[in-house]
Image 1 (cartoon, rainbow, N blue to C red):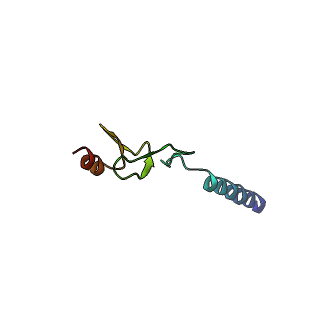
Image 2: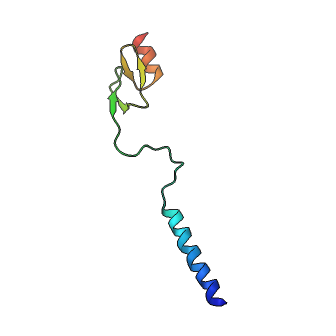
Image 3: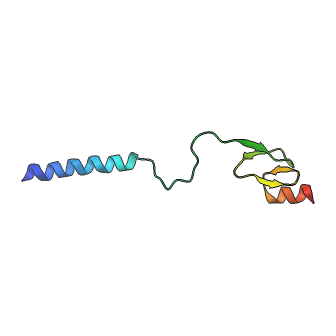
Length: 70
């Protein structure tokens, strides 16, 4: 009986360690390289997915878009 309990503890420990090492699916971080685009106003490079688009190009924020496009 004590060997059965020991076996369950070992199997449970292995399962727990594997769960801790697995990457979480809830992570919203993109994997791999991203395309970076410069802000027309200040020149800072931001990820293309985060860039704010305007009539004259891409910007790092809505504030810079409004300041540049007036």
